[in-house]
Length: 291
Image 1 (spheres, one colour):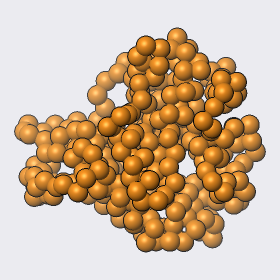
Image 2: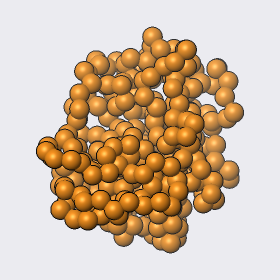
Image 3: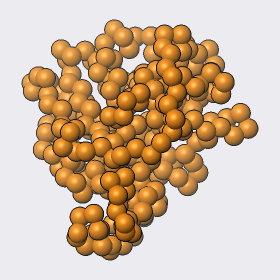
């Protein structure tokens, strides 16, 4: 994508928003009881589901997930947009806690599910004592293989078989397809981390690449959210990205909108333009992402 298009996509956000940066601290994992699943405003319409972690939906003051900005870009008379993300979850724990099964029960033919995980998958498979409210046995085996490992999950008090990141991601895809819905895999959002003037990407041999490989092997749509956002940040430059971040990873309100626009840019680039008829007027100025 050309620098001019990148600036057209992202610069208006810098001009429209200002946000104080918060000190980066370890956040408590969100309490599932306080983050109930969103319900369809109109059950007769198709639904776009968003499934992910705190980068998509967060409860910490001063932070905002990009999924919380997505509904504005769609016509509510044509499609429901349900952000079912919850902070602190990995591709594993979103499933093992039962949240994914509840989302699957809501799926209908014609729905679409955006799936984005990775930032919490690098944690421990089983937390050693002492356990505090800030710890979670949420890690997955690195990579996309079929290996597994049995662990004693002291948080649940149960023996658990833990699989690879790729195994869990493939299960999301398979479950969505079985419901007659369409899965779209997104790479994880980048951190505010730079090297030699470039944003550090989640590749090679990392969750960004692994999500792409899962999508390609499964024959489903993939949006390189990591790359789209990184290019947008680079178009602004490291000295102008501060207002987008609340900490090194989580977005401030301006950053959430920045990342949501990047997701729309990726959706517009999908073959066949599957969302062209359901975008709102607010999405009109966002160009499709290109090489």
